[in-house]
Every structure is written in C-alpha cells, then in structure tokens.
Length: 85
Image 1 (spheres, rainbow, N blue to C red):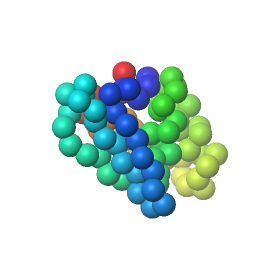
Image 2 (cartoon, rainbow, N blue to C red):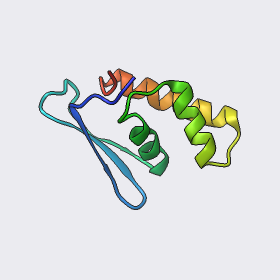
Image 3 (cartoon, one colour):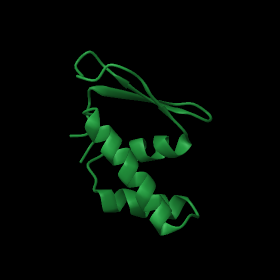
Image 4 (cartoon, one colour):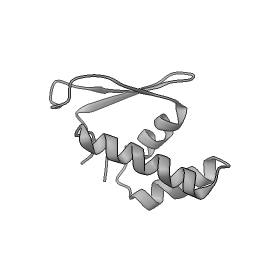
C-alpha cells in the first residue's frame, strides 16, 4: 500500500495534516498529531502494514499491541477517504 498522490502532507512542530488535491474524491482536511505524521511519512513509499508497525516500534517505546492498534486505525481511516492505493 502507498499514500495516494492526490493527497498532500504537511508536518508542523506538533501537528500533521493531510490535504486532498482537486483529484481526490475526499474533500476536507485530516489533522493529527506527530504520530500520524510518522505513519503518513512511512506510507509515502510502497510498504506493508507490518513494515509500518516495525518502524513505529523502532521509533517509539510503546507496547506492541498499542502500536498495532494505532497503525490499524490510521490505515482504516485513510482507506475510508481514499488516501491509500
């Protein structure tokens, strides 16, 4: 899976944004924390759910179950709005 090129990303100090272009079917703005930004950045390249989870485990000291839950939630929501290919 990979981030749909019809979506642009922006990371600020504490927040991350995902903005659809005119080619996207979704209209709105996705706003989240830095963790969302890390996941979205990982999705800019072709990757798998397990690779995203592994990268997040390397970056954050959190229980594996919590990381998996967060990654699964983000992937599910991005699929709903058409942000993943």
